[in-house]
Image (cartoon, rainbow, N blue to C red):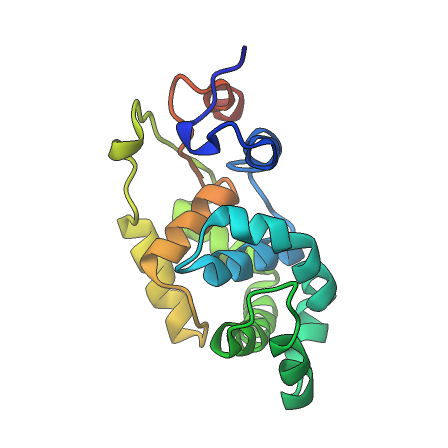
Length: 188
């Protein structure tokens, strides 16, 4: 039997996410954008709630194509607010459009969102060696720097805690506990 991080809590959907995605380095701009938006949407909610709505988010937000999302107008935002398949928070929905515009600007400046965002960890994952959940921080100096810089560039819903959760999700940090089978797999 595989030992997993305790937050999986024997939930099949969370197990699949934990085993296949969480902590795996992501370098595709649209997937990085997706995770940034989903982590912001999760603020105040459980990650299970967001995972259940993930496919609805992909459909609602044109598979997180920043060019398409950046063109959303008030009518489209109004439609999204009525979409029960996503978190219907107008501020979070509007921030997705704002963030798409900011991401496009970063792509123009840095060539890709990937090259910009990974600079906060010098281009490679931080390998942590936590033995229990209580040791894992909710934010770090790297997530605080990322948050500050993203906010300067116009992003919304990117506080240090959201940025750290994003970093964990996209493999910028390996926060699997050392006894979790994924820790050593991702450390390689």
